[in-house]
Each structure stands twice: as structure tokens, then as C-alpha cells.
Length: 402
Image (cartoon, rainbow, N blue to C red; front, top):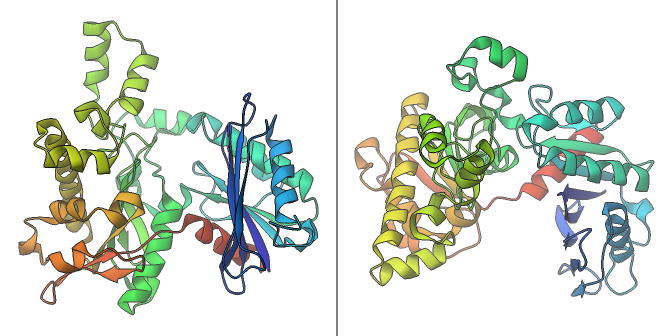
């Protein structure tokens, strides 16, 4: 069985083709700047295929239909392809950012599914319409192939009302759906399963704090394998300090900026989403640059790291209280998997809670999932590389195979 995973953005298409018998990646790529004067397509065949290799194209791609056509052409190409024709693709899995309250699980795509995704577009106006574009084009291109929508928000739908409700008039929740939804759910679900396996437990037996740290970051409290709280809110702006997003902030700051600076709602929204976080503190949002600067004595770079890891520690502390018993703290995503300083500082001083990091293990650079806690640590500390595309492929096959 071969499953194609598609992540369609407003001007991009990311894709991976999996052989689900071995869960091996056969090919993957990305098309960027769709609809612009110059587009870029990168395609790679993976080891184990007949002819491993990469190719790049820089021809203009006018729209998503043309872009997906180029993807299929490369997948079946004599030199860079891995299948004879599109009929070898057995299922297509689509990443969809926002499922609102309508979707709690992967869903086979039909006309009613599309209508429900469109209805949630106001909750993710930059993402859901782009995701739908890819879905509609793929349905035309693979007419007889089952297609499944995997929602970033679905894993968090197990949260109780006391965790997802905001303390605003209840009527606004009923009318407009204003509540905590959470994101990165596909990643949090994937590392939950992997962590449970490493712990030698069933998924419904584990209590975890999963820490997804990248340019966008989130943390989730997992009880008996289910999400009971998460840091991102109605939008991906809440919670942790991120690359360009401020995370938690006094909501009255919006009104203060409007009055003192004459800023519009749109300007404030842009400020908090694109000019804040690490970038707002020190002018950089790549942790590698920030670490280099702090090593040279840059006070603002040091402040950025201090603020990020302090916020992480506050959330870890709150989720320890929520869960009571914690089997493991699990770091994942770009910063979570690769930044030993951020991991160590985020857990520094938590020894009284049974959390002890082995600094030698923490400093090692390895690709596989592993433990980095000391032998005496009662709470395990883990690094689990995330694989959202594989999780989408797995969930797609679970639905298609029913």
C-alpha cells in the first residue's frame, strides 16, 4: 500500500510518498512560490529506491493544479520516479490545520467534509482555505482514490471544558466558537505513541508532558494517552515564547497599544505574530544565531533564552500539577530535538519534582529516540523525533483499511 501525504499552503505544496508495508519514505518534495513569477520545486528519491537522487526545477507554477501535476509527473518519472503511474497510489492523506469542534478524528473526505472545513475557515483564515485548495485539486487528480483529512486540532479535542473554555461570556463561545483548540496535534499524538512504546507501556497508560519546540512551539499535558490541556489557544499565538510570536500576554496590552500608539487591530496582530517572541527580544529568531550571540556576551540574546526557558518551565510546572503523576517529559521538533541548552535550562531546578537531566546524555547528538535523564530521576526525560507526515500516513491507512 502506498500513501501520498499532502500539505497544501496558500503558495506551496509539500508532499511525501510512503510505502506503508515498511513505512519507508519513497519520495518527498516541496513546491514553493506557486502563482509567483518564479517558483521552486525540490524533489528527492530516498535510499532503497531503484535510483536515489534529487532534482530541482525553477519554472513558474501558475496554480496548485499545475503544481500537483508536476508532483505526479516526478513520482512517475523514468529517472526520479518511484511508481509507474498514479494508479499505484492507494490513499491520499491531507493535513488540515483547523477542524474546530466538528472533527475529533481522521475523516474520509467527501462533500460534507469539505463543507465543514470551509465552515471553520474563520478560525484559520490563512490555512484552511489553502488546505482545501490542495484537497479539491487532489480529488480531481485521484478520482477513485480514498482521501482522508487529518486535523492539527483533533488530538486536543479530548480536553475537558474546564481546560478549553475561556472566562468570557459563554454566549461568545456558543455563537463564535471562541475557545482553546490547540495545534501541533499530529506531532503530539505521534510522540505520545512513540514515548509509550519506549516506556514499555500501552498508550492509554501513560501520563506525559510533550514539549514541541520550534519556530512555533506548544506543550501538552497527556493523561492516559489523551490530551487534557495544551498551551496554544484559539490561535497559534498563545502559550510559549516562540520565534516571532509573543505567546501569553496580558490581553489589555492590545487596548493599551491602540490608545498609546494609535495602532490598528491588524497592526497589533502583525506585531504579536511576526515581530515578537525571540525576534522581538533580541532581533533574531534562529536559536543557533542566538546561542552564538549570547556566547559573545550579547545581553539581549541571553535574555531571549532566559525568557523562553523560563516560560517553558512555568508550563511544565503547571502540567505537573494538572497530571499529578508524570511518567516522562518528551522533547520534540527542531529546537526540542537539537538544542541541549534549551532542554537543560527548561528543566533546571526541578530536581525536587523528581526530574534530573543527565548532562552527558543531553549533550549527545543522535537521531533516534532516547532517554536523557539520570538513573535516579523518577520522571523520565526523553527526546523523540517527530514525524508528522508519517503520522498522517498512518492515520490515513487506519481509516482506509477499516
